[in-house]
Length: 358
Image (cartoon, rainbow, N blue to C red):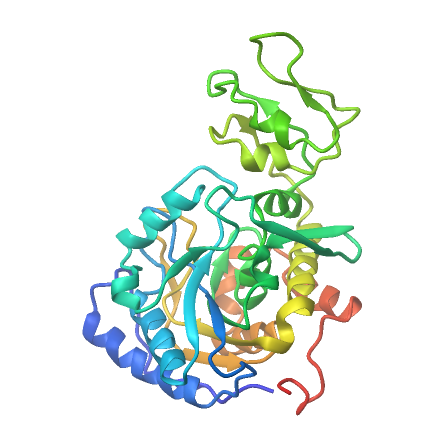
């Protein structure tokens, strides 16, 4: 079941957060969607609001005005919200917790402005994670420990294009957005580490976190080495290297990537779905995701916000509402329909109407 969409008049471009008057109007429309949803949160509950405050240099991220509106609404209802995101695998402005919070502040996401705390879901060092059961692609899925620590979740996703998955919405926000750095790597590729000695400081983190002993120091004061016969491709060393000295292998069959994306989201949803509500923002719909630095062209007019209770259904409705044409034109080789097919195969589908919210 989903709420009705609140339509906007079409606009042709929104490439910077400077249109404050327009954004304030959009925030009022978001409020209407929030008021139309049902919430499974306990009285006074601590609510984690999943957002993406944009990569350093990105100009298409959602304005913090919308996160402020969500936080204000939740507080008015007596809940205790906080915003969160997780660290990323690649080098940039969100690789560590400290860097991510600095990037958030540059983009206007501060506690003072949004009215609630900001938290790094996997911890400042990326190690505050837990494992959940997998399905086909993974035996286990490693995600933020917040899945065990809060009373409810509000999944606030920016619907837009994506270079690898074709489009990104609620499913991607639950998968990449909740995943540890190691799990992010597992979704993208099967990995064996390759060291760049020019970046390596011989700190020993990769050796400390290796679960099999594949990473080791072969000689005193030497660089770490990696026994590929022992390596299981878990990507802990790559994900946690503080200097990004281990090379990442990104090549992967596109259909397998879609399946891994969905399987990670499904594992998260099975853990938190009964205490979660979702909203997709169908505004500032850009060619690629908010991890992309620099100019990110708008590919479709603003439509509005969609609220719902299941990520697959919400993304399907979002894609139908925006239309497939912009995504086909730019990312037509990406088999995004595999997301919906695989979700059905593993039972990651919406429950009968009336059973979404207890």
